[in-house]
Image (cartoon, rainbow, N blue to C red; front, side, top):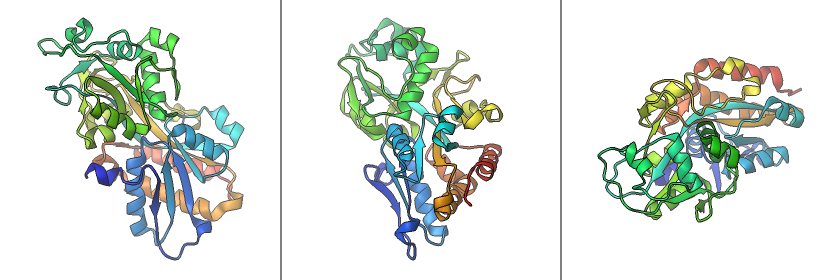
Length: 343
């Protein structure tokens, strides 16, 4: 699947149109760009089998998704930053994970092939803090022995909008660098290094990295692979350098203990395992518990997400996402029955 097909319509609404459905039955969602290419494909495929639905999804970023569901301007919000159960209860919301994906460092360096450059979490943090400013720095050279590295300034590219991808990326950096944790911490938006460059959404970061020589950024794996970007290897928690492969993503996801995750709160960064990719994230859907005023919409909405769990795994894998395990999908469906009020 080519990039122009995958990302078409992400700036505006992703719409599925079918006959016989009135505007009152339109399902509107907004939020994370991380899973947007997948949501686009799911919605398109679901339109062929649903008998007629209308679903709109706006890829605006996780902060916007949370703001819109709290303002009740959409039927569901989407966020890559999980909310603690206390926050969910306060707003009368439930959240559930629908997909997992990887975050990849991507670079623009001549003569470096995808997966050819090695980075550790510590080195990555120093680059994004401005402590390592050139690609031939001794700390980069030390973990890339024998590789010819250019004497080229590093330009840091980051998300300019409030982003769940940023939340998970900075969560990882906070785990591997005490200095990062103290100076910047983990958030959807931070005060980035002076001289760094911001890009709107995952697609904007990818575009900036492809444009600026010597740059480094972070994007969701689908954007990296579909854009043919130069991604890096990463040193994982077990001390092994790993490539960003489906097997590495699945290895990290397999360590998640969803049975002990109140409100499905789960952070997948820096998971153990010799083959685990260290920067993983779950993407969540948020809906209101009380659906009494829109039971018909609730039925349409949950049927769609149920279909995504049951029939959307192959689409997810083709786009380099990691489907939720069946036992987790079953837990989510049970939670719908236990928590959503429709009468």
